[in-house]
Image (tube, rainbow, N blue to C red; front, side):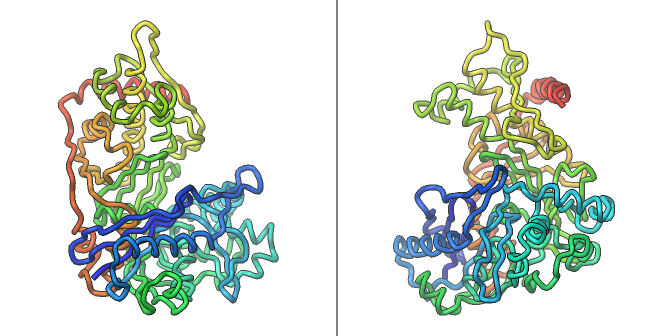
Length: 493
């Protein structure tokens, strides 16, 4: 028996077909072939048409069925991972009212900050763990204030994954983990965050009914099944935002377990059993996929804007398309730890939340024109990004997140030994490399809803661990280099 998982991003939709009993991946596909378009009606805005996401879910499903020739009656469930913090509004006929205001749209920052002050910082953090900031609740309030006709026309306000589930099942629903990422959930009262809704003047009836993040959320309608090529009645059995879903994909479910990724931006996501929040808001906390009121499972999320984008910039600067990432790794390996005194602050991709939303920029420190060459810049870049991860992880430790084991996928920066060993050595963590993706994790988790796995731990535990990276023997030299790097960062702040 098989399941399909979807990963609904802002660039593409990824899908994976998995044999549920073994975790074997039969196929992974991406649609479209080029990045999805994103509209910016004004500076700092970002919108997408939610119908495009569904169109590419359909295309990816048809592609994966054609490639594998698996019979649709053998596909028992589907799961959904999706881009977090977006707002989708539909009317009473389930038609989209306006384009989705997606995660990177900044128009509602001031709206969220005003609500944070109105509720009171301490009260808001104790109940919701985060400020409304630029999350979904603030975006909904922006629509209410600036587009009252659209707000009035909307029957439901939902997250991007909720919309895909609606198109599949015909039922508008959401989850606690989804509500928490929108700052709609009150952890203290274990209910919809009335204090946020009241402060913003939002109508609670516009929030859809809740279903479990893991378990039966509805079944494919005749129309959706016909469009996708699946069987009517196929269960939609799982839904979570991309970062909780990536953590689940890496079998990060219990307190003390940590997931990380090093793409264009870097993310570290650790699970704790405390209702943890950072008074300085350098990290954010959300309900994890297995959160329950009596047994908290909180995902503490660190995001580093200046991450893989720096490594790509260095590549383009010193070699362009002719230079491979493998060759860059070889170059870095020929330079000693600490890059002969050259240090790179990687924060050149906008304001950094973990730095108090300051935009400190990217900087080379200690550059010696008589000693340093291209290889030094490569290694200093990798070490600088790793140091940024370590800097942020210190905040997570303050909130009770154990960093003894960090699980990562077999892609992006963690394929670099220099990068991975730097983090492992400075934190004392073992880094486990797993053969998985967000779409694979969503597929495996959905198997629980149809009895193909007893629980999500069993489901995602069927994946392959490819390798592990343990702390090296050069800790003293790395600590010395990190201290210089951190001192340089503090001067810039």
